[in-house]
Length: 236
Image (cartoon, rainbow, N blue to C red; front, side, top):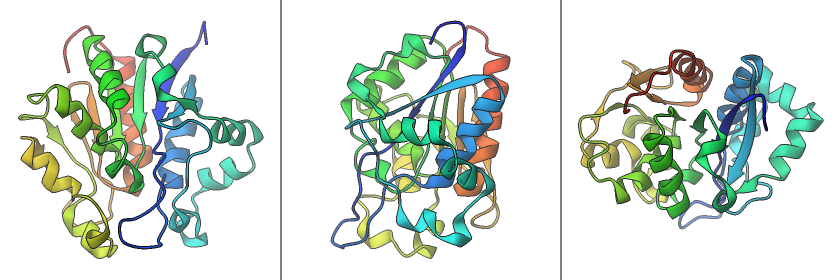
């Protein structure tokens, strides 16, 4: 991975909603839109997950009405498909190899990325190295894991994520371990959202960039690229 700028993308390995047979996992467009934004900007993307191997995809994100142009591009991209089927296990990843990190959503992160020690380790290292962190929709659940080792990190931080209202509208509120908006607020974050549900909303606070929902995935990646291009040695 030498001689090229590198982005780590952390994907969920969790595939099931609580108390139901419904499947969850990574939301396809929240991975593909940023993936191609980073590639077009000259970054090489390494896909990693807690368990390694092929992460689960939320079946709802593969429905025809959910397919974006980048989803279709991904389905025809043999190289990207192979990377997705062979994600690296998080414990083998070192932050020093990357310029920044991006965490897509899907409901899966509420279970594994929100409490995984390797997520906490990596994000802590990215912060120490003054490298930017991006996350979209339920991806900011990874910040909950970070708060386990750095309880003050989110205090006063301006963030967004999938909102309680959006959670209610997709009718999954009763099958998840917690509502992300509520948890981020409990941890001291200054939370904001778009005036209406399901429209793009991106928040930057220093080197931390968060997006609200699936339509925010591409804009969140674009903002993270802007941060990478202007990066300076200061804490996020």
